[in-house]
Image (cartoon, rainbow, N blue to C red; front, side, top):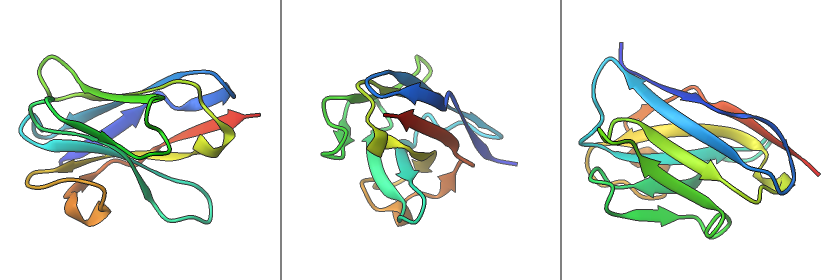
Amino acid sequence: QVQLVESGGGLVQAGGSLRLSCVPSGRTFSSYHMGWFRQAPGKEREFVAVISWSGGSTYYADSVKGRFTISRGSARNTVYLQMNSLKSEDTAVYYCAAAQLSAGWAPGRYEYWGQGTQVTVSS
């Protein structure tokens, strides 16, 4: 069974930091573009960041640019999201996703999804 497993979420005060991890099982995703999305209660799932399969290109939502950093592990199979200067509006469930062809901001382009990890930022 192919899975993406997120971890690293939790409760943090505004201005703090968290590092999310996404670890695949069942297959390797080193040739996939990997993205992070988030969904707050009552809102649609929104794009956060994406990294190309090689790790050479990254793209961020304007709301997190300069505060969040997406990266891949040395084997390009694990993906991280370093989140700094967290704000209350960053509170959401964060999802990792994988896209084999073109990726980007649209959730429909991603074939595999994790179950999500909760991030709560207290003000």
